[in-house]
Length: 309
Image (tube, rainbow, N blue to C red; front, side, top):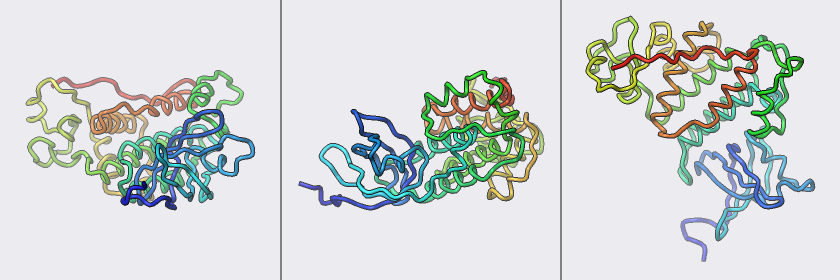
């Protein structure tokens, strides 16, 4: 008997966050939807060459579909494409950022719980990735149809003839802005203007960041910790974090941030995200590999030094 709380089938739109193959021709997918949060379902026969739905269910595609309730799994019925983000798929650097953002969106969502704000943020960010290009890359590396393991192998390739000259700092800035926005929407934005411990306004000087205490610490509270992990936060990185926390993307896009300052902001945000979700962000390593490869074997510096409490 069908549960009265669930209709036998429903129509929804969603973005494909993850998929994995099952059996000889099926595919399990995880979607982020605005009205139902995460939806997990199986697409029967999606991997057959004759399938009419398989191409619509690739990673990071925005689709409209019918989902039917089943005894064990939900099942995908009709599927229509809304947005393929083709420009994102034409470049591995952009694709790696999209995969990273999709994982964060999944971590901050739950099944059958509406999450329209995070859905809109992800859809907007994927569109921005598709259009963002600052001319620093010599030529894109195709990512169409790539899966994570294949992408990692490509990122580790030493074929310099197909390697773009450099990666895009604008894409890194966009990733940082996305991290701040999803933390804000989820109620976990760190404190960047006042001390996370005592609440006093922070002077314009270098400070330290504590994920455990939820933000920057003043000099007095810095010394009151119990051996916690403290990260350095210089004035330029603090200004960048504050600006991104109060700004929409158009006000951030044109910034030219020195690599060391952007890397310090990344270190702070990634540490905080890891603390909040209490889980490793699997796609971060892939994104780093691609970035390192795209920069001729170099990755923009990520300060590893910590300040003891």
